[in-house]
Length: 270
Image (cartoon, rainbow, N blue to C red; front, side, top):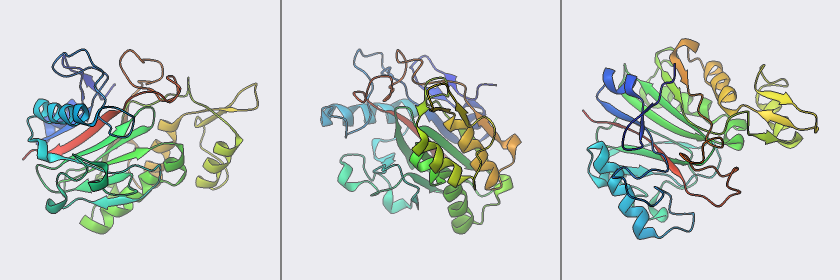
């Protein structure tokens, strides 16, 4: 079953998580929550007017019932560095990239009122929840981050900081480019083979007639989560392809690099 539910304001929500726990979790789309005509880009690094981006960030917080100061983000570099977000870190990166966590693709926290935010236009959003220890996490997984096992790094960091047991974790894998649209070369295939110890799991890479491959990044991250000890039944995965639906999503590949960014988000509200 599709874990992300469309709302009338254009935001997708992880409703099962939100019904069970005092949190907000989901992902934005191209649509402005108040119905405005401009694309709802939330990233400061794509050539958009910074003042407009900051206003949209505030609008997202308002739509989620959180103060603007909750918005906390990192400078994503397609890596595997994961950080813990403390009360003192709340709001990092909200107004300027220079104040974001540097060179970071994963964040986690047990602090209520901190909105973890990461930016996407085809890469895979990974949501993590430890309901026992009241910990949430969010990671950005493009092919490079996947090859560096950012999912596994997140799990290991949760274990180290909070004593999380991987079997207690729940994971949701959000909208991203699907295997229908993501063609990669041998360099990418080789990197993923190395990650998986020589052979990738079935369904991750499919050779085509052009000597290239169709890559299922979501399936790759699902397998890495399982390898890190997360139970398969605790992993939910979308079927939505961002490149197939540029009327609703930004897609770096489908739009040839000239596009905005959606935001994946998660926060404890109580």
